Length: 160
Image 1 (cartoon, rainbow, N blue to C red):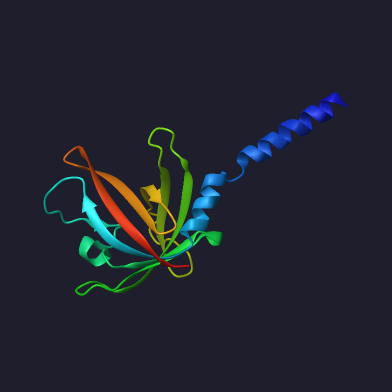
Image 2 (tube, rainbow, N blue to C red; image 1 turned 30 degrees about the horizontal axis):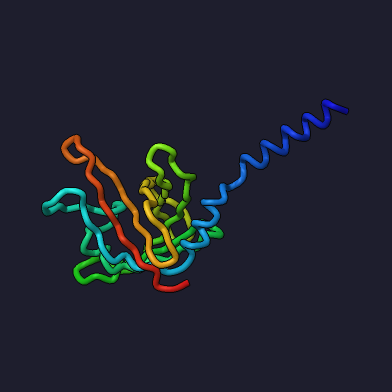
């Protein structure tokens, strides 16, 4: 009987520890809805030709609208800028638990077609540095000349 009790406790502990952390679940609720990418800045001064998410440059992304659907981890962003390849881009995303070293969430983005299939299996990692009911900030760190270079993306909530 003691062995069965011990086994039950171990299994229950394992199931609880495998569940989605409460902070991630809450973040998905806040993330749900429509957002506008209002501003993109860099950690270093200067002019850079950055291609974000293998898609378009900074000027095309500023003013883009994003819709997150957390219950199935899908999303779409729409580029509307002049001199840009306009239209919808689909992707799937996940939010990892907080990284104990940085204190930030890892936000993983994988472009897909409209059926949720990835053509090139390439994904991108950004840090979900700030998330509230009205604003969100992502930080993507890349290497430029062997040094870390941060791309800061600031969003504002449009509606749910």
